[in-house]
Length: 399
Image (cartoon, rainbow, N blue to C red; front, top):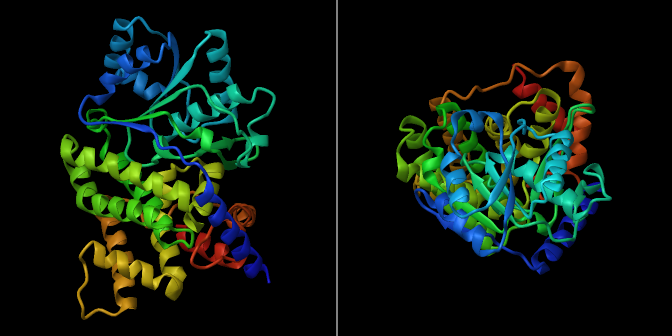
């Protein structure tokens, strides 16, 4: 009965999602495309902006050319650079205070998924000053326009520059959860491959696998449309063709540009078709142990795909055919298994571990509860996991 109830909710959500008036960001692409942003901001008659980033990017000065462009256009800027991996409510409130004190009119998110999540949270709190971030958890709790948000990703993974989601952590309770609203979709997404050439190989690898997880979970789920299927398939092809090149040749601009596009497309896919049980588990690992989200997804993904078994064989077989690792002699089951094995092989080539050593047995029951609550009833996964299923996966990924 529970599964019937969950599937009924998911069917209703699928109908509702497809009736929404979706916005997509205006897109700037190509090497040094971020340098077009100051002129665009000026044309929007914006005089003061808050830049949300992190200390690492501040130290290496990656956004100095952008600051010079803002200076040239006479735009004042204020920098919030205390964003941490898995951004916290404290980050959001600090950034919001700086925005208000400085009389800003717009926000530039400059960095990886954490910077973009933090910037979205700040925008949400500006739009809804009397509603706390915990009270925005879940779907459509904002329903008001945010200040203009310009998203400049420096990693190719989260796809947050095109999504309606922001993920927030509470280190006090070890929670990690999403707020989701159409108003969180940025006004502009800037895919500047020059900003990603300095990424360390391990970050290139894990963020790339994050994008792959988004695309795969969207594609094999039960809330797809023709549009989301195309986004997901295009992203998956780009990732298998370009991720390892970007990992081994960090300054390969074409591979970097293709990975940014793949991440963006995967974001468009999952923001409409949802993610699945991989993410439900990964979020608990971020909340309890601050495991980077891309690393968590990369490790978990093949275990969950294996565990889905025949419920996912057809869709995974289609993906195996898509990336051309099969022929007409393979059965659907063989093709599906080959696709999962290809993910494992790519992980291994990029030195991503098979298991995680941080997981502590006494935390598993609470993580199981939280993963189960996140996934059900909304995630339209091939196989609805029970708590016992989640427990099995935690035991499998634990080193």
